[in-house]
Figure 1 (spheres, rainbow, N blue to C red):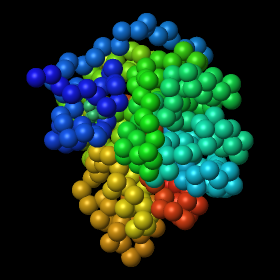
Figure 2 (figure 1 turned 45 degrees about the horizontal axis):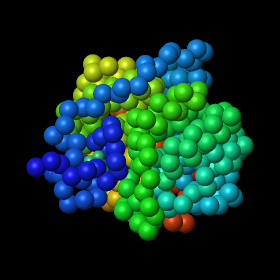
Figure 3 (figure 1 turned 180 degrees about the vertical axis):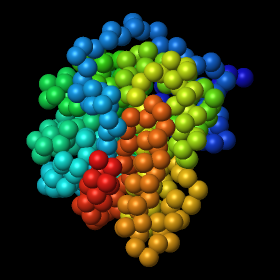
Length: 332
Ligand code: SF4
């Protein structure tokens, strides 16, 4: 019996949403890619970029600190205020996807607001909400704007998140989007989930994204330092010879702890969130835990940065931004 088709119509699967038991992110069936060998990137090999983009140069000199920017969706004021808090404290902000707020300003417009506030933008793009023509337009806009980098993901299905009424697009997947972003002249990152089934083939899958054009890998919440080290070593051996940015969970109150627990495939060091929840001052405990975890991750060879990752509970966006600024300052 053949496997059911991928609900995201992916060519270069599997996505990062495969459940621990091998089931699809959105269907009660096994992920259709599990029985298949890693799909090779069949496009043209990418040429080296000269000169190197500034963020890549920086990563060769010292580790970088990137932060998810907590802001109210569709609020220019909130984006500007949050950017103001982290300006000068982090090297760039990742403007990514949000399961509880799928409708955001369009990527190029959001990037322009934050960049005008004096913060380098690492703009996220997903394949769920736009077809290849719309994505090509965004890539052209981001290149013209001069953003620091673009983070290319396939994206969660519309059946997850707050807009299940929307039609999913998935005209491309993250590998194809990475190739298009590289062709547009942008610094390109992708993500990988080390423990996502099939974990033994994730390093090879990342190597194919690198062959397509990816230059940096964000390692989704990997768990402990040894899990991160193992993945980075295996991915590098498989051919993904790129700088790695490790995602560091940031939670500073019960609401953001709850939001983090909703992350697909979240894996954290044992007791990480419980220690924050149980602290007398969760705000200070969350900052201290993030700084300690980031410092430990940065000891891993090949890890050239951290991404301070979390979702602020509604109403706590700016308080969370102050926490990110403090973590960034402690790591600088
Ligand atoms: S888990 Fe992801 S890649 Fe696998 S079939 Fe489902 S949507 Fe497709």
